[in-house]
Length: 540
Image 1 (cartoon, rainbow, N blue to C red):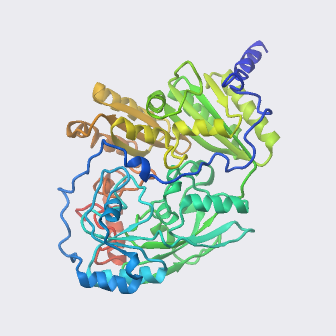
Image 2 (cartoon, helix red, strand yellow; image 1 turned 90 degrees about the vertical axis):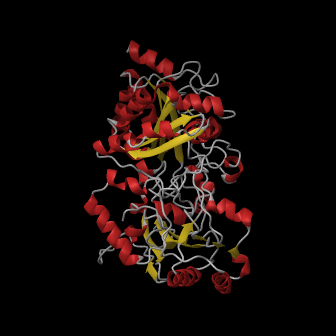
Image 3 (cartoon, rainbow, N blue to C red; image 1 turned 135 degrees about the vertical axis):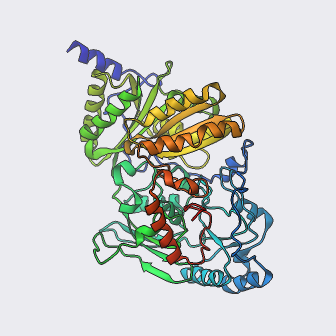
């Protein structure tokens, strides 16, 4: 009894002199399930300030000689389809469209097309296929593996003008919309209708749902709602020859033959261009709580995850972790960020979010879980956010969830210098061993940071150096991929393969599997014009 009281006193200590693990009955976050979301104004304004970047050369890739070169007749033909204003040759606009947001990859396309309808996409692709003009589909251009920008002179097809919400069934929660809808706009639309998107990303102020589907984007809600393979009910896509595949079903159950939509989810525009999406959206729930916790070691983080799944169950909506290097980076490079658990620095930190419909029940359930976790030593310290501002300050540290100018650790990494980013799916019990081995391997030559979606086994391994250095890269690769392969992990958990990892696919997939992928690609895009040099190894 004495130990329980001592634990409860610690839990009730103050954050900002009031609420470190304050009793949840006092002023919780309970307005809406969307209260943790923030508004944004796009990535461009802050990424343009990054000075430490390098264009990763394409010297090892040869332009496919079977592809044609754009000429004036092609441009005039596109103007006939799209109108002059949607055929872009402006150099400044093209510079942005040719460069990924991390400024690692840069193409040399001379043309950006902006179709407004599926029919226009169809006509453009039919012509490009007949002329063997390679194309790169593009949405918000927020990818990190070079998948959404040209490698050479591919024509850019940006679907951002296709941004209509077509329908929302308020009984089933099925949303149908065009591929160019910005994720944050869909979030706002659904919020007003009493629903939420099952997908939440920091890039939501810029990324588009078509790109999300094409890359099978993950994010913070996957632990609760699963991947887009489960929530996307149907798509419309245009093949390389211009044929339109109408698979825009809205049914939860449809067992009639092969479920072909899954070929387009995660194929990064290499099999077709997604033009419409139907997606199952959950109802918005009223009770949201967020806790920022400290753990003494990675083993405690694992055990905490196990206990959270058992004891929080249906209300657990996010489980994120970061190490002390990640927090240090955020404190040193992000304006306005402060340590939620001063003055000490702990080895690991965990963010747990719960979302439910019964405010009293959810509070009591979370409090009981935290008290028990403190008693058994899984938590060293912690604080529950008492209002939306505190919740935002917690997410500000970790988060890809805070859009545009407020991306937490990823933003801090960009400000710190050069970054080598690895998005890995690994068994939870061995995940952090890779971070420790990389620190031993690199010594003082780099900072090795580990954070990610612990709830679904996704590690974001980031290696920070003052500038890009081939000698450091040689120590990182192929070691990271080999290590991941030995654990039977995935070298791409949620970012895709793009150009960066196309030749690394064999670390995660067998030769037979990749060969079948290549056969599917050849069947659906025999001229290979759709997003060439990406996803599949260049040898194939």
